[in-house]
Length: 188
Image 1 (cartoon, rainbow, N blue to C red):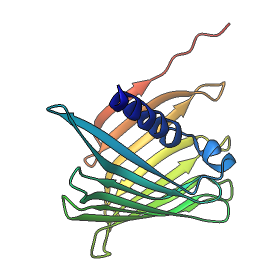
Image 2: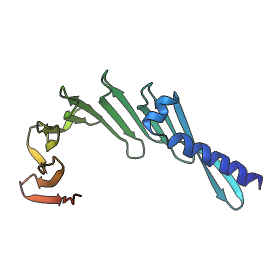
Image 3: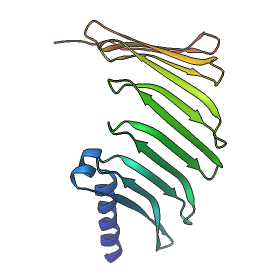
Image 4: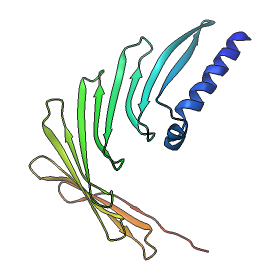
């Protein structure tokens, strides 16, 4: 019975802290959270740290680490923000795949993301994505390119007269349709 109570207490703590939205993290001035997993085998319990996350004063994640049951680090992510709370840089380390990717972001005056650059572990640019918007602030295109500017994929978005998303079309590098989606709305 005692084990069940300990497990329930830990589960409630993990859910209540790690499940918090950004505004709750900011409101409660949470600096970091640690998630613990409890595994039961053959009547024995084993507890290990599964993740650790740090936040800035605005409730944004600045670092997140995920762990394997043996304590080794699986992944680590770090994030930086500008004075307007826009994400400007994100670094992802995947230790199991020996993969390290760094992304940088640029924004327009309306805080719309206009550019995303992706770099490999050697710091070499391998992908660039540009975003465009209509005067209403709705994203109209997303163009993914290689470092030389060759288009790898292009996605366009359309909107209905009420400014709601009505279509999405993705073209591959040969400019052939790859996928599409359509939205229809019923109004009162």
